[in-house]
Image 1 (cartoon, rainbow, N blue to C red):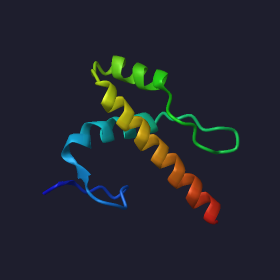
Image 2: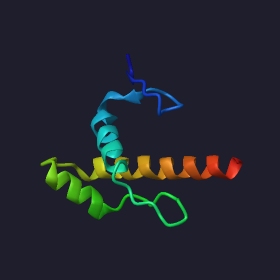
Image 3: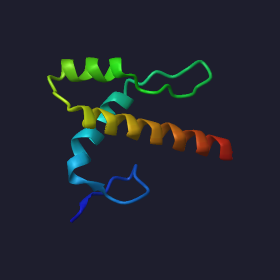
Image 4: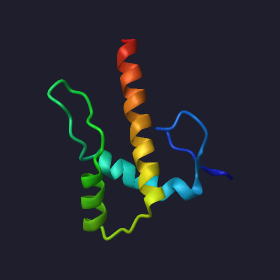
Length: 85
């Protein structure tokens, strides 16, 4: 098997190497800031730093970039879907 399937992913299965970042992304998403207009705010590097320090996780720069890309894809998808309504 190439990776895992997750009901939150509509595309290809998630590669095994990305699973830890995927789990961190969703943990961070649970504490994501929402603006007064009800729109999601992007995850900041400070939020990622605080989470990884609290959980005693060491991330490489490329792993942080993957989490940020996941976040951009999430925000883009949400914005696209809300524009379709």
